[in-house]
Amino acid sequence: MTSTQYSDGRQETRVENYTKFWQKDLGKEGEADNQNRVESYTDVVNGYYDGATELYEYGWAQSFHFSRFYKGEAFVASLARHEHYLSAQMGLRPGMRVLDVGCGVGGPAREIARFADVNIVGLNNNDFQIQRARKYTKKAGLEKQVSFAKGDFMKLSEQFGENSFDAVYAIEATVHAPTWEGVYGEIMKVLKPGGVFGVYEWCMTDTWDASIPAHKELAHAIEFGNGIPEMRPLKQAREAMVTVGFSIEHEEDLAERPDEVPWYYPLEGDIWKAQTAWDCFTVWRMSWSGKLVSHTAIKFMEMLGLLPKGTYDVGESLKVAADALVKGGQTKLFTPMYLAICRKPALSES
Image (cartoon, rainbow, N blue to C red; front, top):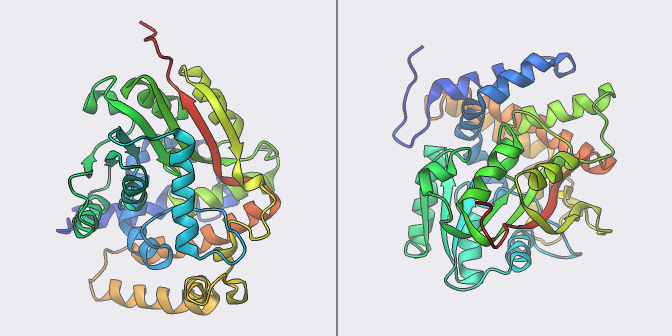
């Protein structure tokens, strides 16, 4: 099938094919389905983000991640604080060369560049997001401090060379990798000896049990709604970091903090829970009426050829995502914020 290539980098066929990587009944998902997604992870991820990026920006600003909330804290302030916290935990210092693995449209890279006065290279395998990241970065006047490169995070050393970054971070991005050992191993290679790696990882928690059908179905719903080839338990992330040679200096599931306002509250769509007046609009967009308005608009725009075919279906998958993530948060079976601060040995293994 010939794929329409849009000038903004999106490809119609991969958007249209995205939902075909899953069974219509997620309860019937099998190992073969998982393996197919893992082997085709670039098509899965690109199909998802070609269709979902503008929806993310509409509903979630330019930082595509979750965050903790203090009572009365504004949504965008919480996002920025989450990024600052990672930067501080990593000990980023002015002048460092830093790699952002899976940078989205560059929201965190711009915020951390300002906060820590570091030089950041954002890596992304999606042309559409890279174009938008460069546009926003130019508008912010940060082109000399933040740049973007297209590439595969499973081939970092091939692209950048070994020992080329002082620090590397990933914010809710490496969950898209076919294996954690593969992506963490590549991060290890491009870090200079003694360099630091900080990550907020998406995981099923260690109370999640793959042998329980309801647990397994929840994981598949999170995968389907978020462009993830395969969800894995937290202990596998920890094991993968150690396996590739990292020393874990600090780790914590921040979702376990006793916060009065849960990290998933914006997804619940209850405007009475909005922490500020402006956030009422953010929360409303995830309510039944907000989703009705936005998804109806998407359907008409797709019919008019203003959006790639399949965008509506990707948008529908986001509804599945919202419900699954809230359920995962409420049951403590899922976390989007397993924080790990890791160090590459000061002396090369060689």
